Length: 260
Image 1: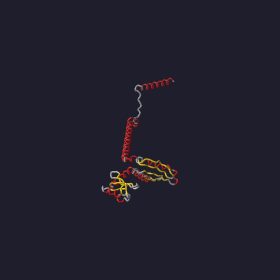
Image 2 (image 1 turned 180 degrees about the horizontal axis):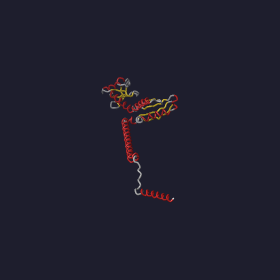
Image 3 (image 1 turned 90 degrees about the horizontal axis):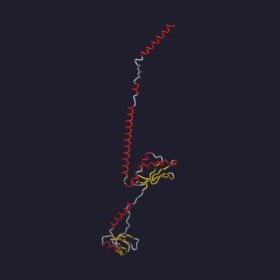
Image 4 (image 1 turned 30 degrees about the vertical axis):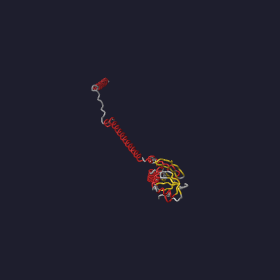
């Protein structure tokens, strides 16, 4: 609902006399209100009260419609220059399910993208308060996964049965460059994955080549087992000597027998 305009102009000015300022900002002086109104109407302008508390009240001669428009533009520019801080709150449980975690994380991301601050609260019940590390683990995980969107303005703090953390929009959010930042991060991650895959493929190829080289150098045990050992035959000229020695021994034995 628009604000009511309480500015007194023209016939709404009921005081007997006013101090008049001309359309060019010059001081006209103190005049009877009727005379001041006629002075403004002769110039197709309005008599506008600008300082009702003064003695006598101060009025300006101007185009009131134009004046209102200019004042509205100034107020709009002043509001635009101001930073309106909105703090949202999202509550988690220390034993939250993965699906619920992702849903609430999406709410936090949406609030940060709207340049709002987010108060993240872990609510402990009963004996859950004896394990505050569970709540801190959730808050640390959330802050890490949203590090491009938000910055920690208040680190996890346990107060009573609640642990709270305050996230504010990141510089990329405030500057309007968050989409470019996320795209560049995704590109670098994909490039790193491709490089890792190529390196793994090169290692596998090198291992295969080393294996093939080792197989080529190693002797074949089956081939060695299939070749029987062959004894070398004695030289041909040695066999007669053995036979001759055996003949002489037999003749000697026969001579001994005869003598006996």
